[in-house]
Amino acid sequence: MNHIGPYRFREVRKHVNVTVHAHNSSVAYRTQRSWFFDSASSNGSLQDTVTSINMIAASAMFQNRHSGTFRQIGLSTTFTLLSTSLFVTKTMGEMLFDGYEDAMLLMSKDLSENSTLTMFVPDLCRTVHLEHVDSGVMDGLDYHKFEMKERCFDKSSVSDENNCFCNGECKWSGVMNVSACRFDAPAFLSLPHFLYADPALREGVSTINI
Image (tube, rainbow, N blue to C red):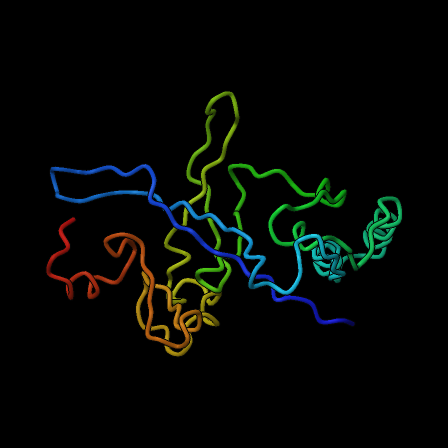
């Protein structure tokens, strides 16, 4: 095992789709993020090769760890047919940003109106579950729209899935405790205007009008 890196990037943020709302003196925008490889301060290039755990194969194995014998044999046969192993060797560019093709992804299920989209959000240092809210066609392409709903911000009164993210007491519904992602600073995240939040939070801020 050899130590490589670090590989450093510069992050550039730009506000796009800026809209001024004169009726309430507010400005709405989306943040566009771009990353540029900083070769001068990096120890290596994006063409360096690295061998790492094949997360796709590892996830498939983990999800089927309690499955029956026939399903596990089927999974093992699929690994053999697709020449899939528990480890994968790719360039750093492919690992970090460019991506690469993997035949195992053909096994993934299509999203539907009944799906829950689970994803890891680096800025929150946690996994969130997005719920389906709409489907349609845009520019000739079918789409499903998913949003963060009340379940993501529940203080575990409905489900205990958020307990491990509280970093202490789960005090309020409607906010996420992201202190662990901010060097233990008392940081909390909410949806706009404390949507789904405990009324006490809105009552504590006199300038919010909904």
